[in-house]
Image 1: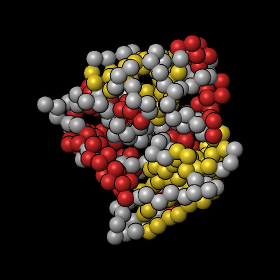
Image 2: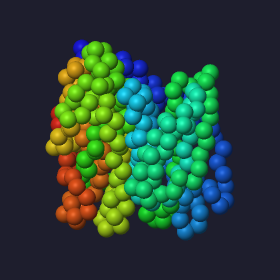
Image 3: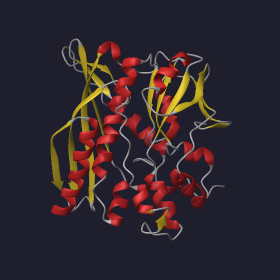
Image 4: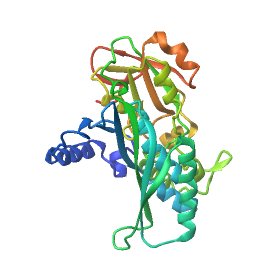
Length: 329
């Protein structure tokens, strides 16, 4: 048996999915008229505003914050907050416009807040969005340290919404490289490092382990050009649950037979924690942070717009496979 997996580390993805379904099953009210929903339960939601839709999504940085606290480096987690939201807007073909943030803190700390702001500012610059405002709550009886989350809005022409419904047999899967671990799977990564008796200050190449884990999530703004120039059938932001995120699209068989080479941090975690291969691909992005699904005839055009390469294809059937491993089994 593997020594570590995500559930043993404290995050059971399947249990989380059941809890979310339980929550969603109770919330039934839907607005009618202007502002009615035209897409729900996807990377982002969309409300009807006439000729276009307003898109909205929310996400946080997660336990990556604990690594930041361990090495007292807080100037990049704001980038992660922007990225995790903006990338989900991009994943339905939407252009990001603005966001608000929410910081829950144990006690106010001017230096920490200023460092967080540096990352938020840089993330907004990369994404070309405005941070319109937000909320800070001091909650000493609830929070230890702080938590950082945000909500982002964007816009999309209604005929430009990409949900994956056009995916068909023979389409190819093109992966754009991640910048590293991004902001998912950090609970497993932390448990592995800590159980091995290592410090986040220990060296990892020319960085420390902590610095490597804090590498900011990549913001995939090139997707805006991709959806304008290419016939795109599906988009996937690879976050929690790893490449199983492809299941959020059309029910097909997704075969990743030529995956990108993962950054060294992933193999370091895998070896240190004796994590099996399938668990790695259903927990982490494994070097593939964003995927574009499109006809093979569009690939050369796509290559001129972004880095990456074809890593697989789509077939009739179901499931997500990496080489001969079924990841979603």
